[in-house]
Image 1: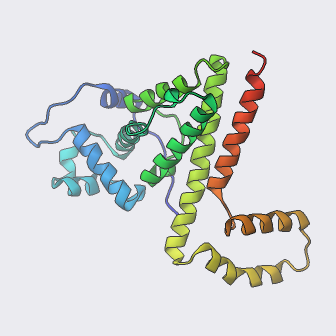
Image 2 (image 1 turned 45 degrees about the vertical axis):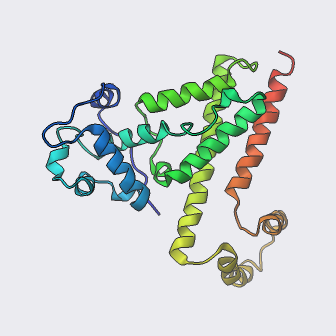
Image 3 (image 1 turned 90 degrees about the horizontal axis):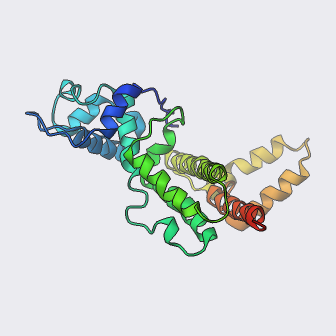
Length: 252
């Protein structure tokens, strides 16, 4: 399992790194963007645990010391990486507000963020912490709020709706990504793994009775062939969210 990265970059330095205009390359040819793009490539290929200034410098063909004038350390680099990939979420997609029906906007936000997590699986390994919003994060927030604006929610309700929806997406995406990592490590499908452990588990549980757990678990297995279905859970949770919002704004 990948380690969860803390968000503890220097906020004052991060503001400058995230928001300053384009920086001209020095004699080394490096810029914060060039370093960030290289780090994203490493994380996509090798995971967040691989991200060190030394490893990124190796990717760029320079010494780790050459990176320090631009980025002080790993925490700041991770923040730059997150902001950069966040700016891509709707780069090739329709924006939520372009969809005519607001329920489709909610579904679109959930699906776009789900897909984003799987393009960059390392993003689910960063703890929420106290993030410093950069231009990428701020732009995405604006785009998603625009999809909820004017449907009958107050500003505070828009914020709570978006926050809760994204929290569900990221939590369930992390669960699915961890399942995929487990499959890769064991080289077993869910079905093969379950066939191996089921007899032992059945024997161990023989003196206990969990009728509801057994019934519901069997229903899930029959419907999906899996012991867990995070994506199905997200679809369900999204529809429940839409139903709740519809009831909330019905008489407004």
